[in-house]
Image (cartoon, rainbow, N blue to C red; front, top):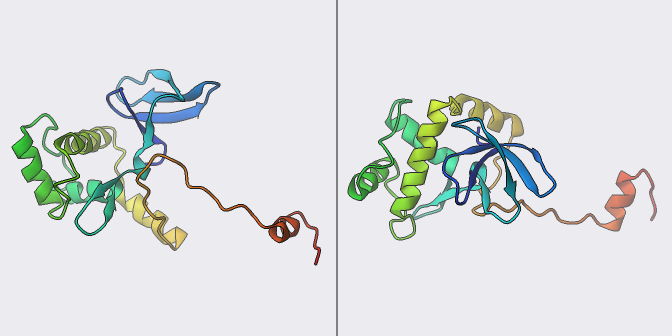
Length: 168
């Protein structure tokens, strides 16, 4: 659901990953469909890598979106430009155990704005997400940063096995 959907620091809205460019990545705005080069110097975060702090654990953004959708019966959330008190009260209804010390009003505004944008462009499909989880057989752990997961290097024996050579 949130694969290839990006937030770019300094730019409003959400963007879809198009391809790798020479000096960054090519993205397309959801709102006006304009394409641009996002240079390697700006902070780019994939929505699937973002989580919200709670009192017990970090909750992936897709689960927060699902909670908002359930509260609103699949409808739109409150406007992200509402007052700070309204936003905090609304978010507390959606996520009663969100960490009030580490989740700021600006974070709540982003989450609600992103939810409403994704809803507007029909990008929220929680049924599809459940089918994908069943197919995988296991959940991936949520990551808080936009950095890609690092894979452990293969041992010499594993490399030799994958290349068709076997040495003892």
